[in-house]
Length: 110
Image (tube, rainbow, N blue to C red):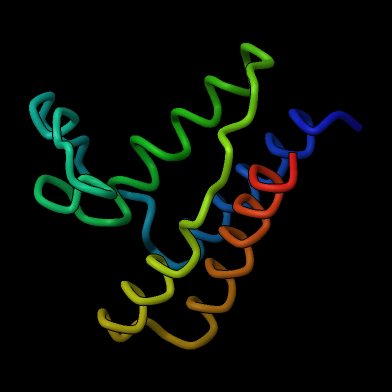
């Protein structure tokens, strides 16, 4: 299995984890929200919005184009902090956390 195939599979797992944690169904951000220069578009989107509409979307495009991997991905700590702050159930934090750690690992190690 190629790294792009592994990443595609990991992104599907992340989507499934977000759905199970009720973090998937949301409104698409306004077009201007994507112009943010802040990390995770924190000033214009919620973290789940950023994960769905920016992070996952960009990585899916990378997979489709068989593009080079970014130098690193360190999203898991931000997701863990967000879920803790929001009072997410432990099971949801673990499920989403493990999925995002897998994506981080695939990107950073390749």
